[in-house]
Length: 379
Length: 96
Image 1 (cartoon, rainbow over the protein chains, first blue to last red):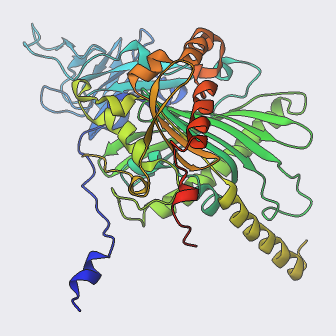
Image 2 (cartoon, each protein chain N blue to C red):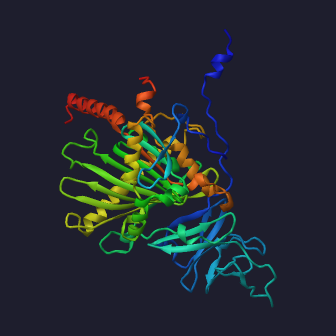
């Protein structure tokens, strides 16, 4: 008997280092209302420090944060007219990245041009196009409009921002990870399907309410219907409906992020809720806030796992898991040059998951919890 | 950074299925009667008639998502019935 055979049978976790390149695509930096005050704002993204400012012409600009003259920090400068003025020597930089004026000099030197990011202001949000190849954004990958975001029939954005110290691939994996919705988030998925095609990755999920979670007497949520798509590498729109005995609550949940560096990202999520007879203005806003708190709790549960887990390139999957490898193949398209995007990264892939066996197991857990509650006299 | 193969394909790989309506060739895999994965390529997507209909309607539908082709779903079920497409549940022993 040799020890070699035992060693061979151990499954090893394998993982390459997180990529140092940042994804090509539109990234939401946050709400326009938080950037549009005419002051410069510092944003740490794509391994750099950026300056975001609204010029006198009303346009929000995103430039590299450091002045090409002597390296002054433009985020501590001042907006003068349509330009950002460096706090060090007052050099003026325009939204197109060109130095427009050196007030104490007769002329601007040659090559006085800094890095800029193409911006999109839409539905209350500010987006930047990141592309290591520095090509303009193709129109077919633009972020879709969100009808409710500009409608009086919906609440305003209820928005959260937080920093997560892990490579952003972990949050992408959630698109396909059906079982974690039970174990981490206390949901009860009853239907689960993924479709990847082009630059879009979609998760269809229906969930049932958890009768064993929540206080007695609380209105029971019957379930949820969710259609959530990543449009590109970082911006997900989730059309999410909560079903209650008396009415449906329609919401849109944004789940988006931008990388700070290879090992951290800024996670943002925003919610709007449709007002209705059952949910007039104030109550819709309360629902948005309540739902926001719920989503916040969900992401905190994720973060707790992420900050302790190992990066893994060879997950060992069972049949009831989602298409993790196929999702990562889709995600890879954003990390290679456009010329190197392989057909299998963008070809349509469908995966409908059979929730029968997971559901049977989870109902056993639910019923055991209910029995324990009854025994403890809490219901 | 290359993405590795799905370990589940070692038990049972995807196999070719042809849509009986439009003749599109896809790869399919069935874990159970209710669990199916389908890999399309550009050629298959261009062939699919239901997809073309959906694209014509896309401006009116929510974010233009195409859910599934029913003719292809039927063709996949036929492939199982004819023994051309094995189901993992019925071919790989249950271990738990």
